[in-house]
Structures are given as structure tokens and as C-alpha cells.
Length: 210
Image (cartoon, rainbow, N blue to C red):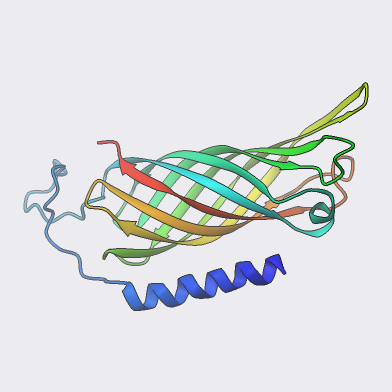
């Protein structure tokens, strides 16, 4: 059911992007101008650094979905606009999932550290984009059962792919909604799914740093 929901979100976002996308690029009216921009017509975002912050609502899949509740967390990234259409960033965050079996009072936790590349498909008020990311997932499991406390952790390769919509708030900031698939290559010593697949839904804000 959760996978069907994610696909419905993707279809909705895709339909919205086709209706609202505006491909016209105007003159740079922002306060920041590239030193190489003699005619003041460079795209507003080209050559700028940015920060992105978002909250997560995370859906587990497979065997993990039978063991834990829906998760939550957040992410932060710092990136650079290489061109108007392409940006790259370094992203980290924290997500946690509580055990459904309350007797164990446990949790599954993930700290990602990835390099992400995103391609923006339009530059109007609504800006659809796609992205890919790769890096590491620092996984940890904690459990408390009576007087027993146990933990297990490992670092695994993490891959991500997703789609989102960004809503411009001027040349300095925007808000966004995105969904993605995280492929966490956990080992059989850590999880019963290899890999563990997670489906986060993110909402957040992005703003220029220079």
C-alpha cells in the first residue's frame, strides 16, 4: 500500500510540473551578479552556494515494515550551482524508526552521508527536478528489554534516486517537496532485507549563501 502511495505522489508531482513549468529565463534582477557576467544576463543561480534543510516522513518496506513503525527525521546539505540546470551537494541527516514490539523499546536509526547531483528541468515559479545520490549509510539498532540493553551498527553503501518540485520565493530562496527511494545495502548480520529499501517523503527550504 505504501509503495502504491509513493507512486501516486510521483504521478501527481509529474502532472503538476507539466501544468506549471515555465522554461522562460529572464534577465538577472537579483542582487548577486557573477563577476564574469558583463551583460547581467547569467541565470540567477549559476555560480552560487546554497543550503538546504528538510524534514522527513519515512516509509520502511519489506521485512523492515513488519518490524518498525513509520519513521521520521531530517536532512541538511550544502551545495553549489554548477550551471542553471545542474547542482551538486553534500548531504547528511538522521532518520529513526521505532520498533513495533514495544517490549523491546527499540529503534532502527540511519545517518546518511551522500554526494548528490540534481538536474532542474524548468526555471519558472514551479521547478521540477530529478536527482541521484551515492555515499554511506551509518546504520544502528538499539534495544532495551528489561535489564538487557543491546546495540548493533555498521556502515553500508547507500544509493538514492528521486523527484521533486521546488517553488520559487524569489532569487534567494525556495521551498520544495520531494520523494525518493533509498537503497541501503545492509548485510545479513544486520537486517533481514538485503538491501533495505526506504521511501522518504521530504519537505523543506533552500536558500542562497552568497
